[in-house]
Length: 425
Image 1 (cartoon, rainbow, N blue to C red):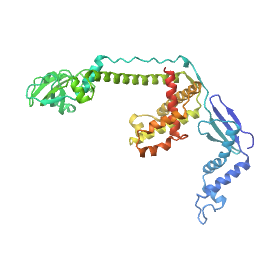
Image 2: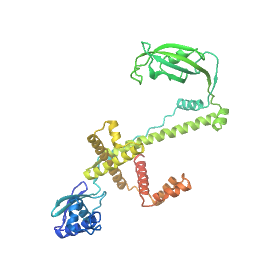
Image 3: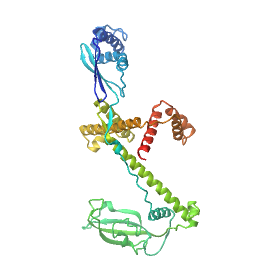
Image 4: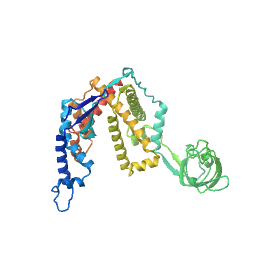
């Protein structure tokens, strides 16, 4: 190099190194680059790599030659810069050509940005007490009992709680059919209020084979706007009337069908299960609120290169998800009418949010000295692999060997769980 590299360190962890090479260094690298590219150039009358230098130069794009020349210079240069400047980079360095003569490069490294907190000690996410009341148990028990209900066809007029199966169609005020309404084989339980107000009441007393016509007005808040607050004349043909019987929650029933000793024991199990479910949902809520609070309390100046790297990762994940759905990014943008500049803004915002949260969590782990032992990791990996078949375990296990990416991701997850557990006490 002509001069020692110029090093500019910024407070956000961005380090820009400007390196200027001697003519001898750049020429030697260029000759190696030219020799490598010459192997790919076809010149009539010459074997690959044996054509005259000037002839090869005429057939090679100067930008390709420059790129290959820089590629030849980088390995030793990057190694020396990292070692001499004690750089702890967290993403791949960004290389840019500043001048061709003398050959001058800009190399940007990014270290972990400095993180501070504002109000982190004031974060407190309240735990909600589970509220499972007797009426909740009754509703859940009723739902389970419905799965064991029986139905028998009857030759009489339909009554409340009967199931009526019917074909129907609807007409507007001018007598024209409203195509989306036509339905065949629709079943409803009278009194369930599953149809628009007045429909089930109009079916009471009808028998199999009977036809009935009546006019009802759709509710103003009906989900299909074209029918909202509109009068429709329904033409109904009843095809079946069934008497539905729902079993009672007795000791005999739960013993035979639910394999529980008694009805009271079953209700106790229901309560326990519902309390656990509520606690699980509340834990998820608290974790979400905690992450939002950590992100809000985290103060960090993010270098643009780090944000751009995160954006590329988010975009790559999006493209992979779309690919699994048989779509492309272009398809998605057209269907959502998303402009490229809008997508760029969204990616940048999401990248900043993700980085801020991740860096905040990492800093908290260090401050609180959160660690996961080898024994804990062995248990975590075993727990993850145990449900798999022997063949599946053999295929998956190598990915969770110590030092592998999947192992590191699982370790991060376990550390996050420990951190959240401590902060949500």
